[in-house]
Amino acid sequence: MRPILFVTSQLPALAQQRLEALTEVKVVQHASTHPISRPELLAAVSTADGLICVLSNKIDAEVVEAAGPQLRVISTISVGYDHIDLDALRRRGGISLGFTPNVLTDATADTTVLLALMAARRVKQALQTVAAGGGGFSLSTGLGSQFTAKTLGIVGLGRIGCATAARLLPFGISRVVYSGSQPRDDRAGPLNAQFVSFEELLRESDLVCICCPLNERTAGIFNRRAFAIMKPTAILVNTARGAIVNQDDLLEALDKGLIAHAALDVTVPEPLPGDHPLVGHPHCTILPHIGSATEETRNAMSNLAIDNALAGIKGQALKAKVDL
Ligand code: DGY
Image: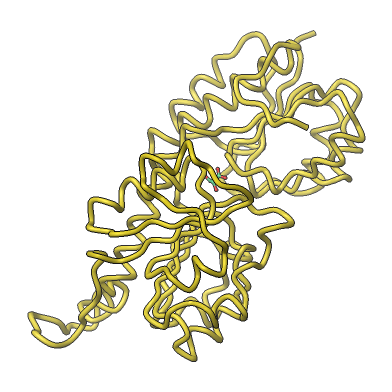
């Protein structure tokens, strides 16, 4: 009998073709763009040898405990793995965890720059003006700001943080500061980036980009206290995880003018209900978690996840493995 590879989502076209052509495993798939239901997920892991999942699938202790003894690998199509209970996997033992670093760095950094420019140049307001039949050249209205001679603050100088800073430097940024759990001299050198405390980064930066993973150290760090330290002209961009920002505190900060604009690719929940006050807020731009959403990147992520899953099922080394 062939091992079962359960896939919780429809893949992008090219990767889907590859998945359907696999012969060494029996592919069972929730082939839908709608999220898999909890009962379907729990039933799937009880018989699967390998699981390919996405970040909207919560792989908590209940799912891990529902897994049959044959489950050898969980392979998430994401670089972030905060949706997976690592402690539950450690307790259970014998299940490898694969993820998809590197292949989404460029696309996500591109989206971070896109949001930074949208915020700085007040694109939300400009689009609304045009949609309302207004607009036309005006010397004195709709004016944004530019990055020339400004300070960029990167929260988390990992792969995406570095790629974001490298893209923004040619816009004339004069200083890059970064915060995180430790200095990253290897990464900071080429960017001439300076390691500072989180408070200093908040105080000094004109543009703050959140590029760190969500974990117990970063959950909710952008809160009332943080917004009070930031410049009233500062722009905040988040392409990491919504829960790094306390959204109630962000709303208050935008209402009080503590910061100028927030541009978010990630929120809690996703999607944010259309009537949430941040959605229509003039100083908040929201995208629907499209950081890595290019044909090239989503196929590369899916292919890496397939590679990881197949390796895990065969008991081989995963191409990209989370150390448990
Ligand atoms: C990830 O992979 O973690 C991103 O948030 C989605 O591409």
